[in-house]
Length: 130
Image 1 (tube, rainbow, N blue to C red):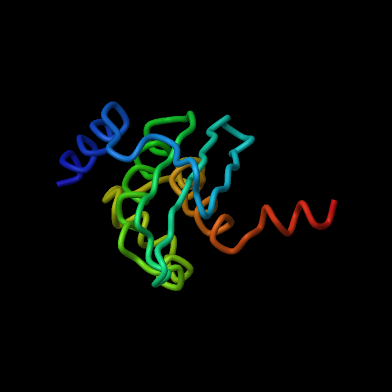
Image 2 (cartoon, rainbow, N blue to C red):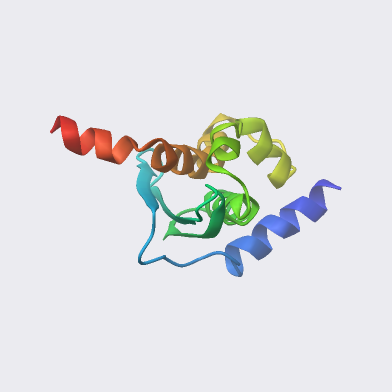
């Protein structure tokens, strides 16, 4: 079964479904994993009912980082902002379907960190404080 998930990761890395940028967007955030150089940006458009109507990611990185971003971004379309805030690392790991060591775990979770930081408005807070 784990081979099936590995194939999914490679396929999502080579042929991402959600790669791109949204302009204009309602939420956008970008961050990196300085240990390995992965960099992810996630853009969201939100409807009047606080549901995600469109989502896209861009960036560079390893297969795990790119596949997890693609899977995560695809999964949030139709969700509310509160549902996004409730996402956990276990949700990402379940999407990937394989066990990861500590170094690869950071790669897999970068997209979740970026998504939540964007939704919570971390960038605006950082700009306000500088």
